[in-house]
Amino acid sequence: MSEATGGRRERRKAQTRAEVRETAQRLFAERGFDAVTIADVAAAADVAVQTVFNHFETKEALFFDGRTPWVEGVAAAVAARPAGTGPLSALCRYLEADLSALLEQEARPENRSYLEALASSPSLQARERTLVEQAGELVADTLVAAIAPGDPSPSPAVEVVSRLAADLFLITGRVLVLDHRRRVLDGAPAELRRPVPPADALAALEDGVRELAHRLDVPVD
Image (cartoon, rainbow, N blue to C red; front, side, top):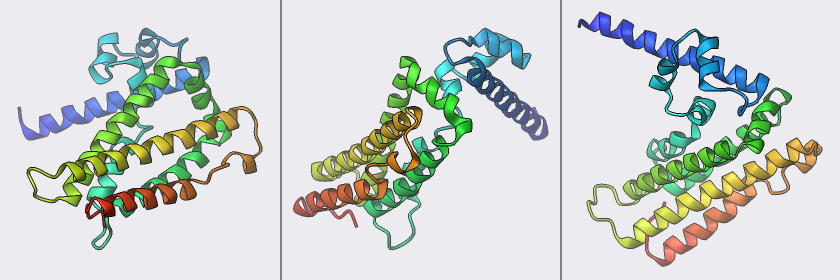
């Protein structure tokens, strides 16, 4: 197979994937997540059911596709941080900006069906928790590599601080997002939707993790 043929094939696959995703997410918004089957998606996208499964292993994966750049984005921001910026600072700054943008996006009226689907579907909630765990694993590994670059056997203190920082920051972000979603769906005024500003919560965590790292002689900055 020539390079040109291979390139065309990959573009067609990417186009099919995008069309299936757009069709599915439109149907989810119109009918509700649980009311839509993979067969419904395949029929509306004019593809075979197996084609849908070739691109998406589950309906939940199809729902979230393209909507969770933070799963890999948080770790990427730490790895690609500017020179002179410590990994913990990079983690905090990225999450602060990302959370603020996400909360604003989810508060828009056109995204209400997305929030309603998440609130009413245990399977989507489970999938989102899994995504947070995956992001945490990536962040922890990236922090270890940033704190102890080139060390094939980083100290237990480095690993614990990295794991703790990753989990604390990501779980805090999730708590803030879930609370904000509940308030949006309950019709709370905009000024009451963020009782704890993300910047304040993350700054407090950053101070605590940095103090622990200092006590354990772990160079997070």
